[in-house]
Image (cartoon, rainbow, N blue to C red):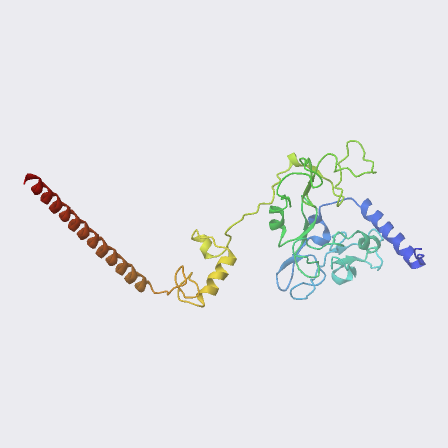
Length: 328
């Protein structure tokens, strides 16, 4: 039998459901325009970075911090929402009420910002899809890919978006059958046909966008996208200076060549070090052998010609003798 849930477990599940509802009710905005993700320039080291309480490079605090929820730098105390009461305006650290654990930005001492930002922080699950770095591990801003909607850091945003519309397969066929995929999921990088994009036992609203059966993201029609397939180039593939000259050799070929060069002098020789064979690697010796072979062939041809001439002379003598006998 399954274990009974404890009171703390039930409270944690209710809190997770409540936080999810709060985040879903929050209007979706571009993450680049969020106050906690705005660009900031340090007063001391002049490095541009994401809005932070403490500089990522020199660990200093700015004179005029910006609230990560409402984006203000000066509290005028007109609304009466301040947790810390003050007579006139408040700036600097007098305006700060907390530091967010997710985005590492200052939060002002307003009651609304302090009570709602922790549940609505847009960088709560921010981990770069390419380099697996979070907010604590890099100082740049975060963005969302316009195709697959994953988090990407400032260093990898252009590289990721350039290769995002590329399928993992080598064709546009459905992953479950052999038919042409009409719908594509840009997060899973796969295609689905009309039948397999719909899960069994799930009712879909008429005219609504069909979600991906694997990850749940909204799919798009393949014909509306500029999708490309994965290409595999077989044969010689090298990315060094040989490729620039037009020669493409595989790694296995180069390793065999290097190991063969240890036993001989030639570049591509065998155990004896020859250029392409197992013999010696001296080119002069090969030339001498070729010359000797040519001389032997010439001598043999001369001997054959002399023998043919002698045989022809003997035949003529025999014919003349027979003609003389006939005359007699």
